[in-house]
Amino acid sequence: MSWIKALFIFPIHFTLQMSNLAFWAILIVIVGLIKLVLPFPTLTRYLNALNAKFEVAFGVISIWFITFFNRIDIDTHIPGSISPEGWYLITANHRSYLDIILLIGCAKNHYPAPKFFLKQELIWLPFVGLGAWALDMPFMRRYSKADIAKNPALKGKDIATTQSACKKYRNTPTTIINFVEGTRFTTSKHIQKNSPYQHLLPPKAAGIAFTLATMGDLFNSMLDISIIYPKNSQWPMMDMLCGNMKSIIIDVKEIPVTAQMRGNYQEDNIFRDDFRCQLNTLWEEKDLRIQTFLKDN
Image (cartoon, rainbow, N blue to C red; front, side, top):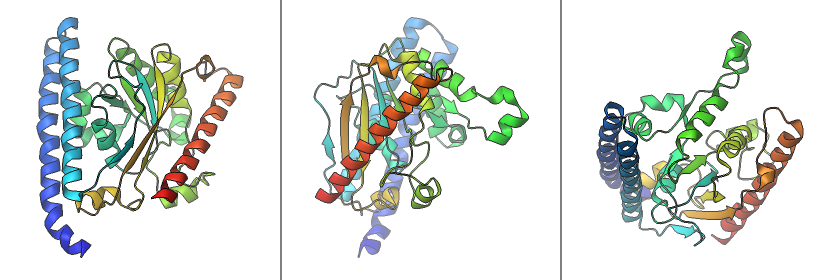
């Protein structure tokens, strides 16, 4: 019966979601082009705020479509101390492209419109690429060990991109989102990476460490967000579009940004080892929280 229902729901829901994406992306790109042509600081700040509202509006409407076609309530656990006027660094697990929609939509009345660190290839994705460019989101290009061996100058390029992007976010309340696993979770990747966690891939520390080193003095706190699809963990995006999503849980844990989280990750071996240990401990606790939610649902 779920497949019969999907035959009717998928084309309608998919069309509405794409229309929503296209509408807001076009508005965001237009504003981005105005910023490019008229690079006056006061105007740029106003246009950035306008684009932030457009971004969150996209997420809110997209989530409304999700709840309409799937008839579910998204179970959110968000501390009341979080404010849209603050600066936050979000670490989140990554199961699906649906994660991005949820993180954007949850920003409303909770935290500033988020900035994602995106893979370079996504710049060619229709609407998404240009929209992200207009929102000043950095595109990260990953280089293999073979590429760096051929051209040592490529080493540290992603670090430089991180630091450059963070400098843009110092003047306006911003939320930076880092999927520290580096890729979406799949069973094959879980096995391939020999992950010590039951529901997560091993975290990568460099990106978040450089973000904290650049902007740690501004962050009100770090938000560790767990996104869980208790009965749809295999294909969350497709299940959602087909009206077969059973439940979604979004759990937010607020963590103070301490002096121990900031240091020279690249050159200080002691700090690097300590930071990796802190992140691994955070990931162990996150894995246990996810397991608890799964048992209860």
